[in-house]
Image (cartoon, rainbow over all chains, first blue to last red; front, side, top):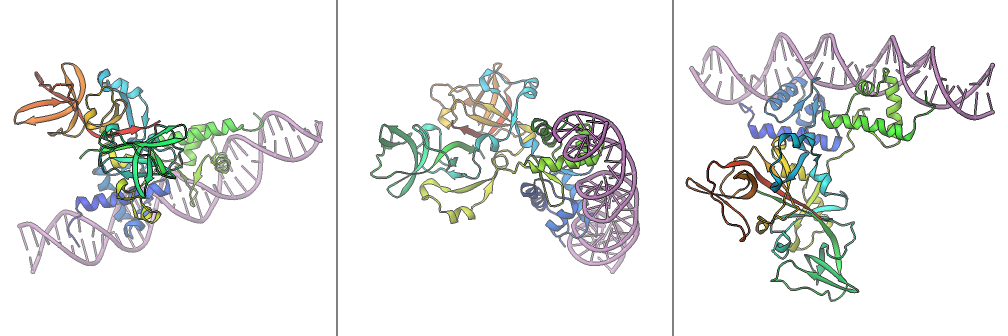
Length: 197
Length: 197
DNA sequence: TTGTATGGTGAACGATCGTTCACTGTCAAG
DNA sequence: CTTGACAGTGAACGATCGTTCACCATACAA
């Protein structure tokens, strides 16, 4: 038996526990945690939970029940940067929201795509960014869409003028594309996400 | 006593129950629901819960426990746009993830800020975007930070060269700023989020 | 080699869970 | 006025919860 559980191992177990809640809609009981981790004794689970709680990896209420730390995952939306930095008092007043709820309207029809290439850099979409693609949404004039042009998929502005349709990049180095035949649109970009570090 | 509970009254009670979970991190027990609604009998709660469940206002698992019906909206992360559009088979293989989990490392210390001004447009951060600010993170050279300069808060690149510190915009129209005295850094930008429509 | 801290087992416990049953009071239709 | 449907009371029930205790097995340090 390895002498002591590494922080990585602890984190992995905490992740196993919290991921249970994603499908179950609630945190697991001690018995269920034991089943998840292969521990046959609830006491082993109790010791583990105490350690994870001390490390801030889990939260419990006054009754000893595990609670989701997802409410804390909702962020406070404050004012704008240049309107002066918000005071704590303002923070309390502001709404909290989840990024998932904010960005995703049709969860089943949406997915993420990693951006490569700089054809949309003029629109603030850089290589490495993630774009949220909604398949269910109708593409309107001015939308950024994922479209098939001559067998290859690209991301471009959709410009409609009467009956004619044009795909325009947000980068002067790329020319507008006039689809030869039928234009296949896979989805509309409804959001952009960038992560630093 | 009013003859029958109106749908509005039912919805109001369901909202009371679900709002409990937002602060508690879990759904309330039957006893707690009774306390919330002023019902002294758990049987009254049980009857109410059955009705709310039949109306789809609440969800329960096989053990009769109330569960959150806000399944974490997880998205499929697919390949890159120009690597060819992914097939359904690839989708299944790809990981799913939540944007909250992806972008926020320290939920308690993080908040959102709406961007105004175009001083960071060269870094793909446009007016109207939301930036995720992490107060707990140490600012390193090259990070984008929220900093106080002469009493006003701005968002800039942090450039450290030896002992000297410089705040640089990502827009040629703005000049680098050399802080006169102490530099107050409110937080580090860990992510950017943009929502269309 | 011995001592000790650590992870885990297994069983017992009181508390609380959701379920169920018999019952009360009240309103509205017949 | 009678009757039935409905909201709620109160108590009892078995099941399961998290806690606790004594104990075992292993790996590391002295």
